[in-house]
Amino acid sequence: DVGIPLAKWVSSGSRQHTNKRGRTDDSDYIKRAEQKFNEGFDYVLFGHLHRPALKKMGDKIYVNLGDWMKLFTYAVFDGEELELLKWEK
Image (cartoon, rainbow, N blue to C red; front, side, top):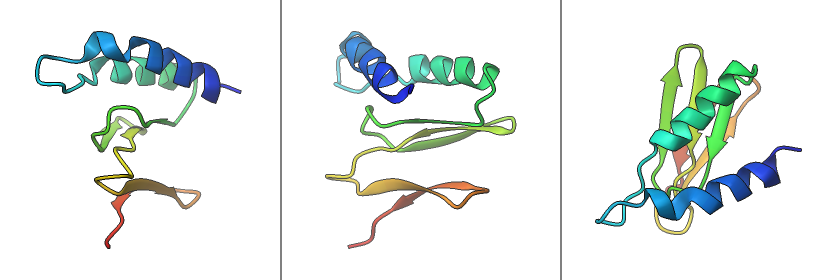
């Protein structure tokens, strides 16, 4: 229920956060993740920055999936733990 609205929110603001080198600052994504953590979520995943990241924030986890087309990064959740992995060719 939150996936599409969340994707629209991220997409609409992304161009505002790209610096001169074309890199995107993830601070707004982390703030949004903190909001979701405060609502009771344990994990928040994003996939828009094209830079993989996994950050433990207390007992919660923020993940940016990175880029499947060039970096080949993906996440796996086994029911207990979430990992950010890289597909090896």
